[in-house]
Length: 294
Image 1 (tube, rainbow, N blue to C red):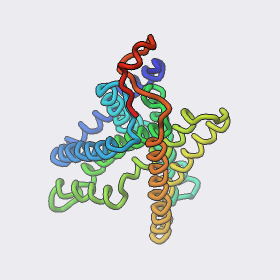
Image 2: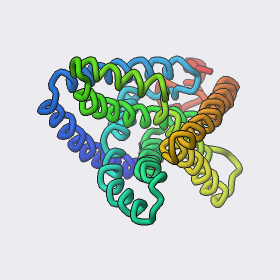
Image 3: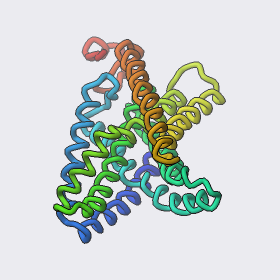
Image 4: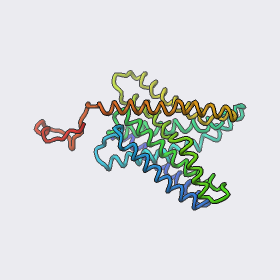
């Protein structure tokens, strides 16, 4: 474990979780039923997505179940905590600046894509440096997916509680409607955006035979892809233009993440470059007693 990365990540996660806790607690004053229901749906959503990722070869093999649980928690906490801070602090003044330039259609694009994607990607970098078990490009992809999952879950809870109150029947009915729209009309968006950036970060940190310049370009290039896809999804250039950009983004986004996961899946299956041992090897006489996992 990189101690510097661990300390920086830990401090920022605590700050972010404090902010998110205040936000979620505040929702109780608006609609207790929608807030509590949103948290329940959020926990269910996290459990399902984590389980799906867990049973893929992309999942990293940590030293212990405790370390694995800590890694999952830090990923979710960064996405649902500190990654929210750039969006809250930078989004509004940036949106005002874009409005003042007359580019109204891009207001939501800059307000979402710019502060959110770099903030989530920073977490992927720190977490990848923090845990020794994260040492392959596909590990960073899964790390990005978990960071995006944390962000998406808290965002869904917030939107569900606030917009759910607009439903004329009940806050809970409105909550379910908002969650349904966000899950089924744009499934796994933040998860995929951050996973794409995570793939580039993983290549930059762990791929062999790349120059320093190439590593930087790869990381920034994949981050740019995630940013542009998020930018296009939020673009509001009128009803027709918004529909076109949404379709174009979906036609790029979902095949791209499928291709990246398939590429990582095949690489993980064929990876035979290191073995896991229950303890440090200090003598050759220990080798026959060590179980090697492929």
